[in-house]
Length: 149
Image (cartoon, rainbow, N blue to C red):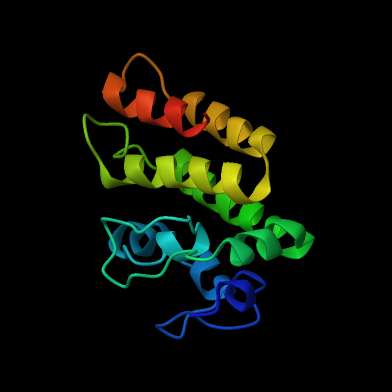
């Protein structure tokens, strides 16, 4: 899979989905499908949660993506899209939920490919959704904080 073309929204992923297709997912689809998050928020390490094996395995890929304002804009759009999902749902605010792992990935991706500031902003936006009624454990919020380092 070509991350550069996919993140530019010029080519589909390994399942024939474009970024626009994924952005059009409803909340049920976001919750149901698990193999897109590693593609729209790629990292330079393999995911233990995805079996497709796609990740940014070359430093040159990372450098090219970091220099492309269109891709960075699309990654930011993906983060706003996912934040909207978090705002509309509450089930992720539990002791453990797979969306908490997704949040960590998004913070790490924003830090790696966009900027420290955008990673911090996303982290702060997520934290603002948490109140005293939520049951997110301290280990999870520590992972989110550590992703900023």
